Structure formats: C-alpha cells, structure tokens
Amino acid sequence: MDAAVDVKALALNVEIPEHLRWRDERRGEESELQSITVRLLPDDTLAAKAYGRPVAGGRGAYVSFAVRRSPEIDALIAEAADEAARRWSAHDGL
Image (cartoon, rainbow, N blue to C red; front, side, top):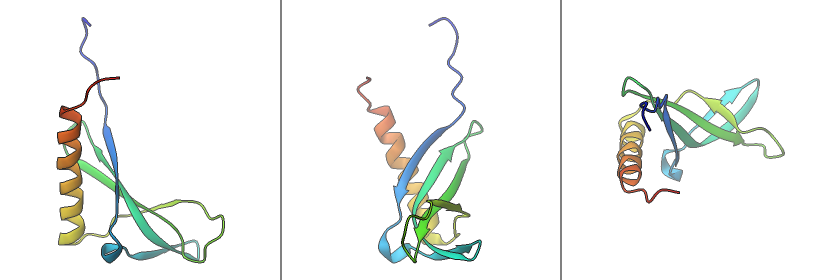
C-alpha cells in the first residue's frame, strides 16, 4: 500500500471477574456490570465503558455505564490492554 492506514481506534472486551463486579442503576433498573470495553484512542490514551445486564433478568438490553474507578479495576484495564497488545503483535493475519 502506498498510503498509510489511518486507524482511528482499537477496542477490546474484558470480562469483569465476579469479585470485582458492581451494580449500577439506569432509568430505575439495576444492572450488574459484567464486562468492560476498552478503546485505544489515536492519542494513545484509553477510554472505557462498563456493560451489564438487568439484575431482575428478562430480555433487558445490555446497557453501558461509566467504569467504576478503583486500583483493582484500573489494573484489570491495564492488564487487558497489555494482553491485547501482545496478541495484536503476534497475529497471524486473516
């Protein structure tokens, strides 16, 4: 290719271990946060959103929430980013 590829962001999903999960409420419905989507932005910083399902069950949507900040959650995100970088650098192509 003659032109550089313009990658806008890279993303990964990481499961939140049971002992680190938390609950949050949106529109009167409580959800348990089960995963975090982490994006590597063009300026090399990370952005993250937590996702969860309604505690009451049913066919509720998978809803996004702000990530709870704690040393353990921050470490989980950093470890996930490091593991994703390792896997990206070792990819075998399509």
